[in-house]
Image 1 (cartoon, rainbow, N blue to C red):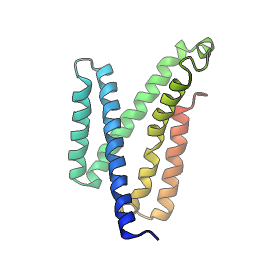
Image 2 (image 1 turned 60 degrees about the horizontal axis):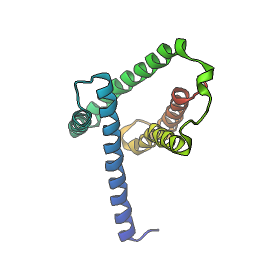
Image 3 (image 1 turned 45 degrees about the horizontal axis):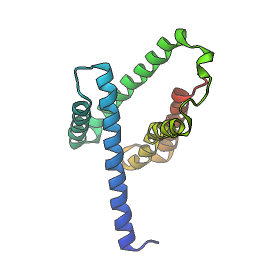
Length: 156
């Protein structure tokens, strides 16, 4: 058992890590948005996304759940479009050399995949928000991990 001081410190470190991760994800979103819509600056897209999701969370988990469903749907359809539109251009020769930027490119890719897979852990914090959490949460974690593996797998 931790002392109250260590528990307090751990709680604040957890909060700091979530704020940092939210900032990184917002910057990534802003970058993607500016690629899609060049008239929107990256910083404006990042700040807008952070403000929009903060406002959505302010109004409660049930309303955010509907927004999250929309976001997941748009993300899934975007990834599906990306995969399908890239199939005609795929050439196995482009995979050589395998790591053209060396260790730093591999590390950057690992960091990107880290953020892609961190969302499943957030499911486990919603135990009081779902019906029958002992059955629902394990199924949701497994489904999320499976979907992430399928979406990010280079074998598809």
